[in-house]
Structure formats: structure tokens, C-alpha cells
Amino acid sequence: MNTQGKVWFVGAGPGDPDLITVKGRDLIARADAILFAGSLVQTAATQWASEQCVIKDSKDMTLTDITDWLITHAQPNKTVIRLQTGDPSLYGALIEMVQPLDAAGIEVEVVAGVSSAMAAMACAVESLTLPEITQTVILTRVAGRTPMPEGESLAELAQHHTTLCLYLSITLLSTVQRDLKAAGWADDAPVLVVHKATWGDEQQIIRGTLANIRELCRAAKINSQAMIVVSPTLGARHWKTLAKSKLYAPDFSHRFRRAETKTIEKKS
Ligand code: SAH
Image (cartoon, rainbow, N blue to C red; front, side):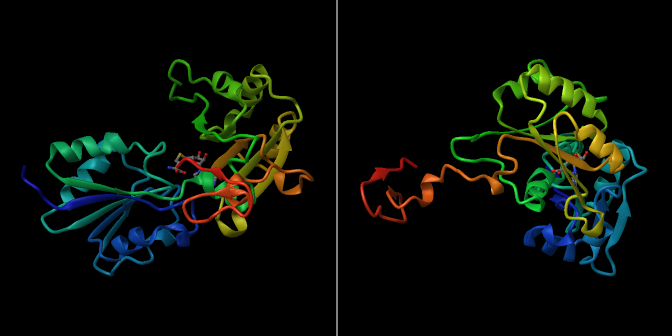
């Protein structure tokens, strides 16, 4: 294989430049060329690039334009970065971009990023999982131009009554409401919408119910860049009774701590 330069797919995180990983930031600092997803990644993420670094916004480019650009810049000993919003492996067309690079004999590496689902929950001081409430998270979307594969409609996935993080779905809230109702979620089920999580003053946190979330988002003029979370864990910060995590219970032993009283051994 004729190995040329290397292309790094780097997760830029949800918006706040401080939420890129140290590894991602160090790569930006030594990059020769950076192609960033302009509509979503704040230009600030490129603030660590050197003066000689070629920096381009990909907002007007097709997938072929993008891979051609990456291939052209991946000359021997060059570090090329494709900077993506959140984590590159979620709704990021990663594999479509990797295949032409593989075909051109260019080495590829991926650096994980903070996905917007995690960022939204952090902004709202909410937990994706809670003991005895739900221990499962489903990252999904409703069908837009991309259809959902069989068995993955929201009405089907929502039947588990676990935490649901919905990407790319803010303009389809009526579908979200319909599908969740079909799956047995109550009108007063809590719903969280975070618009531009971690984008400073532009961030908006909307808390509502399945019945009123659409009205609330319309009133707040939110119709893009929003994470929808539907979960039985929402609002737990204010609950009077809460099942405690076994990990910190005094009677629970694990690899690093001996139980104070009777022992329940954790199988790792
Ligand atoms: N790879 C990205 C997702 C890209 S798809 C990630 O891991 O987050 C784009 C969708 O991500 C948007 O429609 C929105 O649902 C969500 N999103 C991206 N950035 C966001 C942010 N800062 N706040 C809220 N949602 C965001």
C-alpha cells in the first residue's frame, strides 16, 4: 500500500471549544490542513491551528468534494484533520468518507468527541441512567430524508421506556409525540430539549412534557441544533426518594473498597 499522509477524523464536541479532547487539540496544533463542518463546529475550534495551516469550511462541499480535498492535502508526512461536530461516529457520514481514503491508500484515525446527548444532559444536570429507573440509553432519530431501518421506528424503540436521545428530530416533534404516545408514554412524561448545548448565551434549555414540548419549542423559536431527551430519569434532582447506586453503598464490596457490613460481591 502506498501510504501517504494521514487523515484524522476528530470529534470537536458540541460547541464549547474547551470540550474537544486534549488529543484533538494537540492534533489541531500540529495540523497542516483542517476541513471543518462549518454549520455546526464553532470556528473557535480552529483557534489552536498554526499560521501555516490551511483551514477550510466544508459547508458548501459535497461528500466527493470533501474526500477529494482530504486526499489532495494528505501528502507524505502531512497531518490532515476532518473536524466534526460531537463524536464522529454518530450521524457523521464517517464510513462514507473513510472508504475513498482507504481506496487511495491513506491512513485514517478517529478521535472520539463529546456527543451532544452527553453535553445536553450535563448542561441540564440530568442523568442518562438511574438505578432501578432505567439502565439503558437509546441514541436514535426519527425518519427524515434518511428512512429508519425496519424495527427501529421510534414507536417500537420507545416501548422499552428507557432513556431516548433524539438527534436530528427537532422539526419533527409532532412525529415524536405521536410515536411516544403509541408506545404508551403518558402526556405528562417529562421531555428535555437543549438547543445549542454548551454554546454560551445561545444555549437554551426547555423542560416540558410530551403534551406541551412542541408548543414550548415553537414559542422559543427552536427549530435546529437541538437534542431531545425523553426519559423516566428527568427531574430526578428534585425527587424525595431515590434508589442509591450500589457502587457507593456501604454494604457493597468491589475491587477497590471493602464493604463495611454484610458483603454483596460485585461481579465485574
Ligand atoms: N456527531 C454529532 C451529531 C451530528 S447530527 C454528535 O455526536 O453530537 C446533528 C444533530 O446533533 C443535531 O440535529 C442535533 O440534534 C444534535 N446536536 C449537535 N450539536 C448540538 C448542540 N450543541 N446542542 C444540541 N444538539 C446538538
